[in-house]
Image (tube, rainbow, N blue to C red; front, top):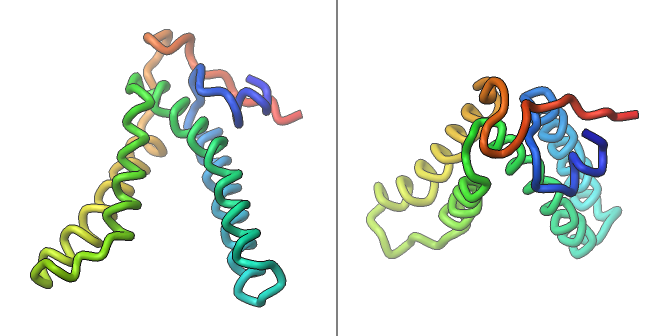
Length: 139
């Protein structure tokens, strides 16, 4: 798999190594971007554009990793649900429900997705999404 296929294609499968490489790169880029914004070296609007620009490659990596686990890419929408629940205003609910809906459920979804995608081995051999995952050629 080429670097372009890794970042921009939703077809195929990737292994745990390539998934964690992207997640580490994404985390480093987000930390750098928000650090620069915190020191007001970059406008927050530029950071927002940067985050939107990273949505496509992040989605592509997540979907390919889900394919390696023999799951449809639609499961990635659970992360959007987690973000929506965490960002929601739950003041109309009782305090325990505020915590449950606004913190516990999103955290549970994210942790379960990271364990599933990052710890478990993909389907051996071919599955309905293609042949076994090939390592990404970074050069």
